Amino acid sequence: MSTERDHRIPSPTISEVAAAAGVGRATVARTLGGYGSVSAKTRDRILAVAKELGYRPNSIARSMTTGETRTLGVVLADVGNPFFAGVLRGISDAARKADYDVLVLSTDEDLQLEAAAIEVLVDKQVDGIALAPAAGRSASLPHLDIVAKREIPLVLLDRLVDTVDADAVVINNRESSRQAVMSLIEKGHTRIAFVWGPVTNEPAAGADDLRRILDHALWSDGERLLGYLEALELAGIPFDTSLVTHVLKNESQATRAVLGMLSLSDPPTAIFATETDALTGSLRALRQRGLRCPEDVSLIGFDDSSWASVMTPPMSVVAQPMHQLGELTAECLLARVAGSEAPVATHVLEADLIERDSVAPPPTRP
Image 1 (cartoon, rainbow, N blue to C red):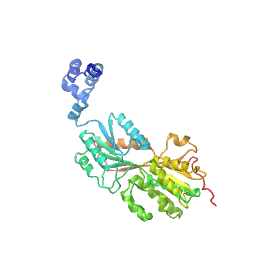
Image 2 (tube, rainbow, N blue to C red):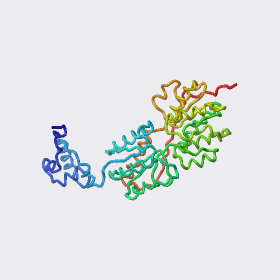
Image 3 (cartoon, rainbow, N blue to C red):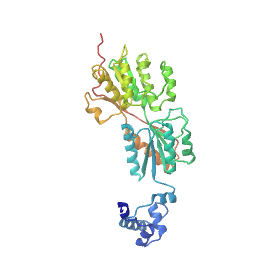
Image 4 (spheres, rainbow, N blue to C red):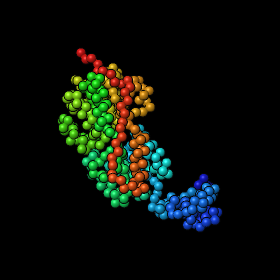
């Protein structure tokens, strides 16, 4: 049985391009492989002939010759998350401009899947790796030893890990969180829920205990929680552990957690939701309780989106520069691939608090 594959016209070989251009095979290989010295006139002639013949380079053969695959590996926590989708777009755009391909793998916040993803990318001989680590700030990541041993450039994105000596591109999560919570306090709120928090099974007995738990939390989650605590401290508002969630991995868990908070004898009058699932879960909980936003409960989310500005009411959010984060990550990685020996650096980008109509003064209670 015949297939479409059977009728494909094979790509011309380097020898055929050389014969048509009237030059040696080695000259064509240098030109098409992007290495060695070839005169401009000869290079232009070879490229024109290659284009006319429909020549397509063999990436495997090229990598064996040059030691490069012109491919960047990207390991993300969840490619379906709108935040990481925006970051990936920035990485892809920057890579495309540099004539690099991107190979993307997702870990679902699982360190075993992360280790497997790193192994795949090393086996694929990618030229560099961008990683959003699925581990807390103080974690040990032995699966990255092979990356260092092979001298594969590595850039951390969105999260820091103290044990990894690599460039990083992150958001100023602590300051962004502090500003968002202060904006609620300035409206008169003192009962402010923090929805998401570190992913941990250990309940916190107080602010000091919570800071200890942060060592095991994802860096971005921990920084946002620290910003929340700092805002409360600056305003002289006592910390209440019942207003901070701990074990949240999806929207349904966020909904249950917020429903629990709303059932407290002194429920929150405002919610700061630090993830998209936390925001949608909070909205669902308010709807199930028949509460209005912002008349009954004010709400601020993290990450802007098209629906946030058109819903009723338009949602106040902390907007992260997702595309810029991805773009700068790729640029840092490409610089290392090109041989940059600049000191390891952490690049911190600012997020913007966009105030819309989901925040109002707290309701008057009898």
